[in-house]
Length: 78
Figure 1 (cartoon, rainbow, N blue to C red):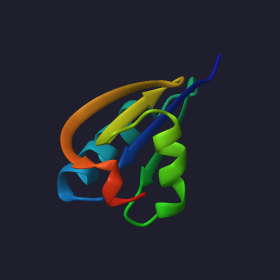
Figure 2: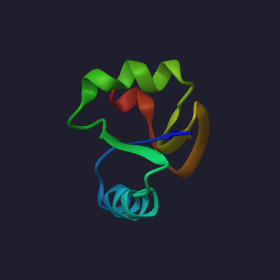
Figure 3: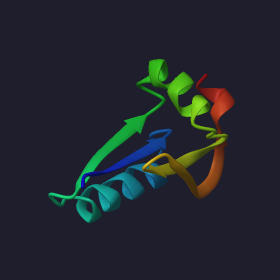
Figure 4: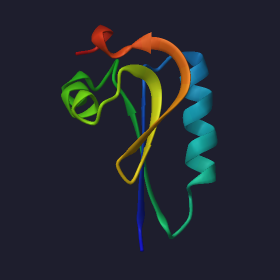
């Protein structure tokens, strides 16, 4: 089955590196990976908040939220 993986981040250098790493790590036929930069895609912030994301960057795997670094509150983008 396809595993949905979404990275919500703020586009900073740390997050860009995390996004590049995750893009490579989840580049398999079993993963559907999406990297969402909320600084440039602010219309997706409500979706992140609905998932329970409070800090960026956060990784969501099949609906389960995992914090990666704790440096940017979601309120900056919503």
